[in-house]
Length: 131
Image 1 (cartoon, rainbow, N blue to C red):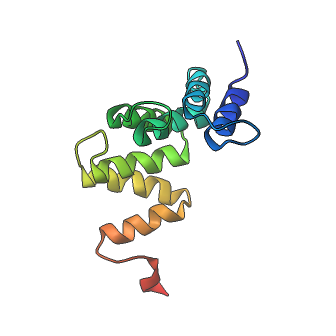
Image 2: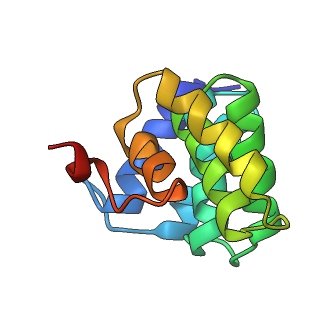
């Protein structure tokens, strides 16, 4: 059966060429094995691979599905990227209201990058306006 965390780590090693020859296809394969076991990091990683064409054909619809699944599991990066998808129309129709909801949710969790997006969505360039 295997260890979900171990498969995720193997995916990371292959994606980045750490101790092994870089192989994005193998990276995706290991991330997918781990995601199939509902390992939250890998669910997000599969979405990232689909969005960026890492080891798999680029597919923004699949990216959104995996980001949403990781968000539903409570993964901070997944929640952030669902907001990003709604803001930019990545695999889903643009919906600034939904983007705001996801950015706000993750900002409340202390995710600084999301706070910058909330400021930008409200007409400010960045947090630097407060400094």
